[in-house]
Length: 124
Length: 219
Image (cartoon, rainbow over all chains, first blue to last red; front, side):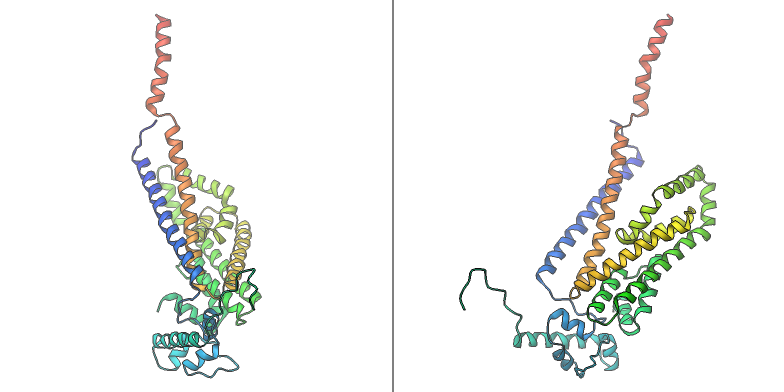
């Protein structure tokens, strides 16, 4: 067996560092993937348009347009939230909060569909 | 507001020219949220805001233009670097080895770094130019790799249009994990090869009995 010189120690250090990096990033990725499997909702970002948010959160777009004081259309307003906030002279965070509240309210009125019944359940 | 929020908002207002420019700058090597951008345009396509064909065309053209800019930088701007390296002890041999490696593996490397090992892309553009890798070959492998990358990511964004942000995080991490695994395999092999090869002391030891034999014969 050969002895390590400083070059080999350097290679070994990078080797161990790479294993640690892959381990950390891998664990984080798996955790996130598991989290996203169970939580469909995306964080609302300033680049998103109202139809995009309605699609992600499965709520009627009209509810969201109404919440931020825009006509439901057609044609639908497809501008990013950042543009809408700028035109309305208010902070985009306030706009996002309004949308979030509207989504919560809408889900109380229109709850997401229940899971399908188990196979073999013949009750009407 | 982050850079990606700002650029994606611009995309929502000005459309495909923004996609072209962002992917071009990103391919040269300046950090840009290219993965998120491609997945987001996929979701725009799903909602009928953008045309799939034009989106793929604009994104591929931007990425290919940026790669070739990187190649040119390496080829024409890299002369000083090449001359400096050539002056070092053994520098000329190292450069020849690099050129030889790039001739042998360049095509596969360029192709894979376009869509699978994306963080390596800008480096390979520069080194391909620096080692005078054939430009038509570079363009060929670059184009098929970039088109594959764009089609793959835009379609993923189209099908998972309600989880743009999550998907982009996931794909970004996967590319780094793959690179990490490749580094581990290469370095692991190097270490094992070193440990198995005979050391100078071993060689000395193995040559000694032979010398003794000769002396005894002479005596």
